[in-house]
Amino acid sequence: MPRAISIETIREAARTVYGAARRTPLVPLGPLVPGGPAIFLKLETLQPIGSFKIRGAYTAVRRLTPQQLAGGVWTVSAGNAAQGVALAARTVGVPCSVMVMDTAPETKLRAIDRLGASIVQATYDECWRTVEAHGSPRMTGHFVHPFDDDDFISGNGTAALEIVDDLPEVDAVIAPVGGGGLLAGIGVALHALRPEAAVYAAEPATAAPLERSLARGRASRFEEWQASFVDGAGGKSVLESMWPLLEAHVSASIVVSLDDVAQAMKLVADRVHVIAEGAAACAVAAALSPALAARGHRNVVAVVSGGNVDLARFAQLVGACAPTAAA
Image (cartoon, rainbow, N blue to C red):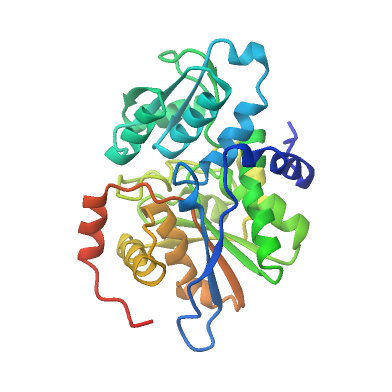
């Protein structure tokens, strides 16, 4: 079934998304090496929930009918989509419940609770089965899928409208991938406005199903999946329903080590004084990688997708890193 996602649906989302989301800035990070690309960071950490997910969540919830909203809404999430749907539900005045992975950091759980949503904790495996099945017998209300939803994806795509507006000469955008909703939205918008620009995924080495899918030419599972501090990126599989969008718009997936992710968290804190969670730092690590440097881009945007990480864990990770070079 064809997806109802286009530059028109993304522009339509932009007409309402700022009822809850913010227009976030691009800030320069580099070039960090002579002759290297200029690297800019899209700071989605500055959203009201500290994550890009408010864009898609608010768009999706706002477009539900009164009948769909009548029984409340629910979602499944590592934490950021849960916050987005919870805030959107509060904005429209309906109850919300969320199935949250038991690996979610406390900072995300506390934020969900503050937004008034009911929390149902589950294992990562149960949550991923719910994502794949688009539902769970444990939950009631209207299910808002955290990424495989046309309205959600269109809302995510509004980030690319801002990127092109702020940096018309952009020739590459890198975003972390969990389920692919952010990449898909950015890809549709960017390729409508800048057809020659490339879109790259960033995945941790412990969970890289998109790289495997692109290599095989079909949606694939990542059987070696391991949990890590990169809780918002790297799923167990690429959904069949998401694969056509990702195949059409993603040039490659750049896989980075957990050490590189932690080092990127430290670099972002040192250079731009922003806390990036693991998934967000994946995009920065990919932007700094030899794999990207070999492609010859000049103006690269890394989407810093969120900053919701427990501060003690953040301090532990960056404290173990080597010092970053002087700016």
